[in-house]
Length: 551
Ligand code: TEU
Ligand code: CA
Image 1 (tube, protein in one colour):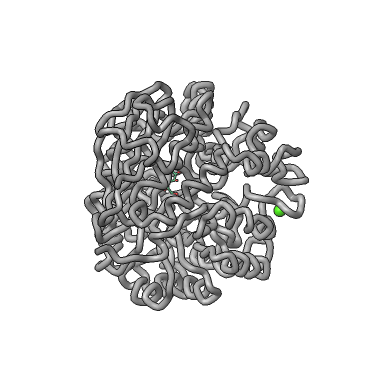
Image 2 (image 1 turned 90 degrees about the vertical axis):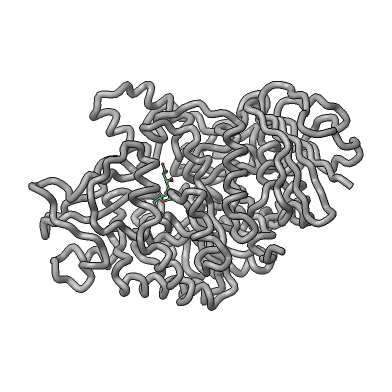
């Protein structure tokens, strides 16, 4: 029997603090704004709050470039605000998971400021330095965000490694002092009562220290085979577990970029004593062509379900995954995986049903519970994300068709997930009384939390119901996943079994009516959840979702 845990039975809600709620009119979301909305979160029924980084940062990558792990960024408030937020969450039975970004720091972190001073500085080997080759970088590794993964530092003439931007130098995990620094900062937050960490790009911390050129062309292969799953990654994670995790009632969630299914249990197998669960990336590059995010490709819906099934089998009874379709790094899920036109409401509810009825801890990204779609950006000046802006500059320099680039950005950019939460039909969607740091979705009169909370048929109320169903149903948490039917037009039929409890889920993940197949339709009065269809009819409407209990 699978081991039970609070982090398996919970439902995660991810907040991108910069865009959640502004209370001081500077156009930037802040911690008091999250405190103000804690009852909203409790009413939705979520039990674990994942906070994207709130530490001191020059915001080159909106906080994923940390310059002081022990300080709250003044944009977000003070340490006292943080402690009030933590208490407000705990008072409502909500646990708080912080974002741990320790593959790299900001180049404005004092460690790096010292390291770059001289080759014999005591902090030099906190980072990864190599001399170039005849004035060129040490190898041909590309950055996630365009350009080389190396930058030459003029003071000593050596290059330093940064898998992301030059303002995010990679930490040298080979150095035991670096590892001890990480364990110390983890304990600092855990001793405050934090309940765990989402571990940013943790599969990348062990580098292939021969730093050979890569012959691989597809960036996804480079991530998996060159950057992730390095020779000492498990040694480091097991040491971290011995030094930190083993001493706290906490959870750890790996951002599992680059981990292939066959290596899942190396990270999250219960006996491994490494990490509890992982966000896998099987589906997150599903529409990326060989040139990556800005080279979108069509994909079919049976592939999407089969990826979830592959990962369910990969972690088996011993491991665990987090189920998600969106976060701050990808376009809005209802636009990317659903329908943000005539079927937006049904699609948002259908995707919620998928997430809440598979095996793994579901993660709701802020705004998905009200079906926020991608934001219509009309020109490049409206974008804020360093990744998009770098790719735009690269396209410009390469003389590429910028109109086509911006068309792709309209469906692919990370900025879509970063526009402010829409609270009410009021200026700036009620997010701020000031000028927002990024464009507010113009549809806020129609799409906002306040109007949905007063409409029992809304997406918000559906999320509340399906979260409640999930949390009170052991079979939907721990039950085995049994696929019955998967079709490329998006007909999914599957069951969840736990002892004598059985549920059968039918989803029509498409824009056309679909004749339910795969299994005899249960009696209509066995339907415990539907997003508006007729549970007695074999014909499922576009984006219709149904959950039946089987006696
Ligand atoms: O994301 C790294 C990552 O997994 C990549 O998928 C990244 O999201 C990129 O957009 C892919 O095109 C983590 C954080 O979630 C992201 O916000 C940071 O920018 C990045 O690491 C660096 O810390
Ligand atoms: Ca603010």
